[in-house]
Amino acid sequence: MSETNEDFTTDQAEREESGSHPYGRYLEEFEVGAVYKHMPAKTVTEADDHLFCLLTMNHHPLHINDVHAQASQQGRNVVVGPLVYSLAVGMSVSDFSGKAIANLATDELSHPHPVFHGDTLFCESEVLEVRESKSKPDRGLVKVQTRVYNQDGVLVAEFKRTALIPKKNPGEPLPE
Image 1 (tube, rainbow, N blue to C red):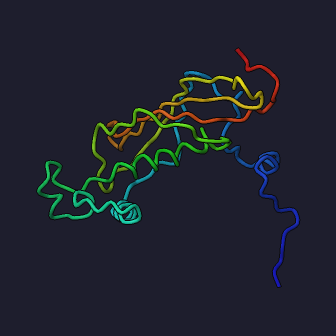
Image 2 (image 1 turned 135 degrees about the vertical axis):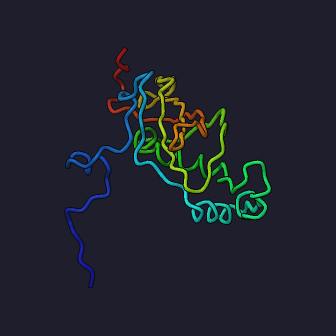
Image 3 (image 1 turned 90 degrees about the vertical axis):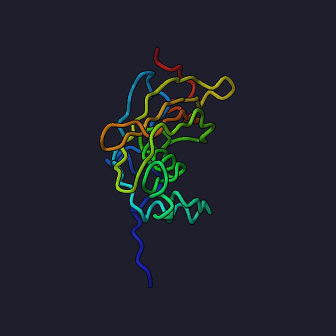
């Protein structure tokens, strides 16, 4: 026999009304120029990197073979780029796309510096654009530029993302 809690709800709006931490933002809550410093930071372990490589079938020896990596120009294993991107996206969900109807695009992804096992990644997103949908009054588009830094403050990845975000008050114009 299982016990259930009849007061339990999975509806995020109800959870937030109860005092739970808001997850994501509505369209009206974004402001061009705002910068969100995402928490928590993440230290990338060798196990994280190897598991991601194996799950995605990326068996490049620079990522999973110590002997090969030692002979490379970096002299050690390099964390696979899609893992760095995926971590940054995940770190930004609470602040950016937590209420998203859809993630629409990723543009201009670059990795200007390698990430190594043991590096700790810090992530921030700057709001570049906020605009209402021309066809649906209950939503709009938000574009951000996300930057990822290592523990030394070195930029290791950056990209732009666009998401379709619901309005809290459909029908009302965005504040100017």
